[in-house]
Amino acid sequence: MSFATPLALLCLAAVPLAVLAHVSAQRRRRRYPVRFPAIATLATVAGSEPRWRRQVPFALLALALTAIALSLARPERTIAVPVERASVVLVTDVSRSMSATDVSPNRLEAARRAAQSFIDKVPKQLRVGLVSFSEAAQSLRVPTTDRHQISAALDSLQPISGTATGAGLRAALDNLKTDGEKTEKPPPAAIVLLSDGSATDGSAAFDVASEARRLKIPIFTVALGTESGTITLGGRVVRVPPDPEALQRISSLSGGDAFRAEDSEELGTIYDKLGSQIGTKPEQQEITVLFAGAALLLLAGAMTASLGISGRLP
Image 1 (cartoon, rainbow, N blue to C red):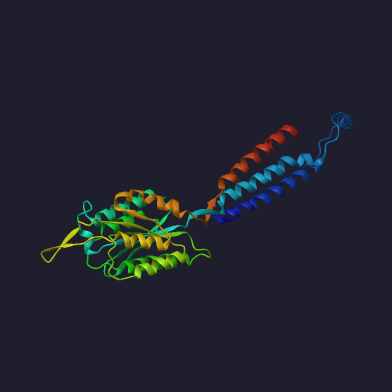
Image 2: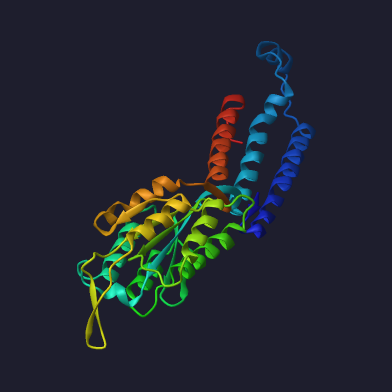
């Protein structure tokens, strides 16, 4: 137990001073007794009373003073507060093919909406990170519970050239591995890949997916686009068909599931599949009210006992 205002503990000095004053008063009372000729008769009628009973009111009063002094110091105790340790990294494709409008309003916007739907539905305690990739990967946000940071990063995404899917997954996996090094047991984690699936870095994504399975980090994929998707490059129309089979293979290799853009609203179920692992962190909790309540009870007890024994307040 600790105290927020330890200087207030100096008030405890009032307790021994009160004890000394009480002892002094008791000695003075015995030194100057009241003479009464019929004292023997009264003692026979009243009967004997244990000496300790006469000390009960003052003992309760002393304890009440102690509780008041401690409450003024604002006592605190350290408690273990539950913390959600699960993490998810959203990996978003920002290649030029993501500007195709075969998915309304375009593939990138569909990916952004799917990601936003995910972070809106999962528990606020879930830590979410964000990685974007084109020719190279960029870690925009490490796993955090700050949803505003993730939403702002999603809004800033713009399509550029290249589709290095493997690099994007590698960056996400590295973020989750680093995050897990802080604890003896790695917390549950997952990756959500939003892409049209047409990678330009060969089989790198499959290698990362296999490693993710060994680390028990499933990859859930969301396929964006149709066979009719096109973009305009240098004044000419270029077809950019998606590769949903590649995304299906990535999810399968990693132990995750594959989704289509049309059912991306169901991404919230990923958290159910992921599960949660509750950790704890120490937190100070003020318990002044407990000591104040004890002081009131002790004062009430002291007054009740004093009135019952001597017919007066202590």
